[in-house]
Image 1 (tube, rainbow, N blue to C red):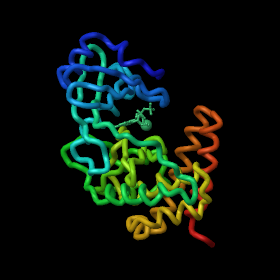
Image 2 (image 1 turned 30 degrees about the horizontal axis):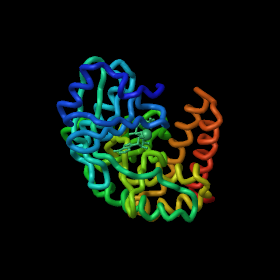
Image 3 (image 1 turned 135 degrees about the horizontal axis):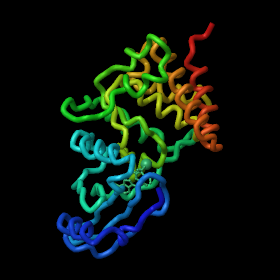
Length: 267
Ligand SMILES: Nc1ncnc2c1ncn2[C@@H]1O[C@H](COP(=O)(O)OP(=O)(O)OP(=O)(O)O)[C@@H](O)[C@H]1O
Ligand SMILES: [Mg+2]
């Protein structure tokens, strides 16, 4: 959906936000991005806050609610969620501002070790039991080869969307944002998801898989599991590209196929 300026939200929403933050002095609307109707940094009496919001009628409102529910369980590399408001047709999240830039994933980038640290920290987090998040078994059910779905099961908290604009670099740390798809599952799924994004940024299959192998969960995963992940990832992106063949989606489907081939047992 297109960006909507914070100033154009209903007055009742402005009042509700100000009840949380104190008076709002200045609004900086973010320009890029696709999913959030509102994305803005507010300067307020109590400091700055990043606000992300969509209409409650939007199909992604469930993702926004999952993001709010999982927030208290996230590791320190993720910004704190201050509040979640739903009123006058809008769902809004108020976050600690991360003054960063999007991660640069190209081969040799100095950001890669920082991303490794942030994902390593996340790999140690057990998915909360009392929060409605996705399960990897359900998410991969339509894509995993027959008989392999059980391999995706696990208890680790997964992010699963490592698009570089969801990883902000601040000084010498990477911070993971955009928890729209928190998932409970096998720990090696996240290094795999990140590896595909590294390929998108120019890594060869070998280089991307070598990066995944920096994570113990990946090194300890069975060949059968990684082969299944490759096949499932290729099937998922093939479906996405078939539904809407934009250049970017077709290119991702090609990369997913190469990723898959790199994960099949060598004859
Ligand atoms: N806590 C934060 N502080 C500062 N900027 C942030 C914060 N969280 C996210 N951003 C910036 O806002 C952008 C959009 O946020 P996010 O990725 O959470 O939303 P989204 O639903 O993916 O929306 P979009 O598709 O518009 O990017 C991010 O790519 C990032 O640049
Ligand atoms: Mg995002």
